Image (cartoon, rainbow, N blue to C red; front, side):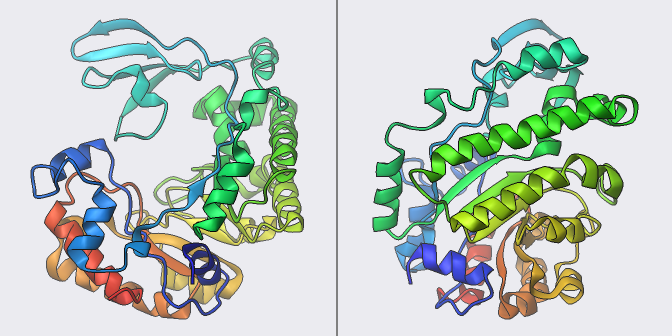
Length: 374
């Protein structure tokens, strides 16, 4: 099987020859630590890992992320506003004013390159006038939203047997970025009609971009990022989810399926036990990363929801850091779900720097055994 076929067949509860080996991705600080622990700087860490394990290099082939941009255009100016006491006040590309530690600069807020803690001071949408200005940054027909070589990119990936994937923000995540979490929650109570408008704007904007994509290529997997749960509870009520998120989710999942996309995935940190039935209702058939520290029990989810939902993630990063018998027990806990199908085991978030390179290699060896690569 190709990596693409293996990924799809696993998550659709079919019979792949092996389960994809996605142990989890390190951040910058993690790689910097690994370079002091035996990982050579001059090599690709995935290729080196496959060599260390003595496994088929196909195991480390990653999905191809299609070059499509749903972000605002133009960005806000990134700038340093103030610096004192080891912290910087910056304006990021999304228009947020926030505080970060001096060992990072504003470019670290563009993508999750590292584990950057920040304190939000002001978000760009606080009133209707702000919203009217923000809307102008989201023209779905902007030429730069799709790479000029998108079709060629997809064709090359198909020839290599790689999964075609896309990632973007869902309505909750996107409105939180515009308004801030507190601001959005207050708007849901005090100005729900404005939140309705923002949510429907995002639904229609996203689908207008998708129509341009689908004219050239059908992705195999689309991941909608939401991050809408605390450690023990969801962030908003089921009623709010149904009002502000469900219309977008349903339309996107239905239309993607009609277009031939088999995997419609949703991401949320925190405890997702209350969200899974809502996601199933919305048409999602995959979710991730199933954080163990947030009391997510993937075996219980499988018992409760059966094969209505597939999972990616679910390996406790704390057990990975401890290694030895602890990570063996963790993977033994997950083995029945792995055997049942519809599950690609992986680190339940970005791999933190307290996971040493030797422990990571040992963990990957155990995972390779469970997934059929060794």
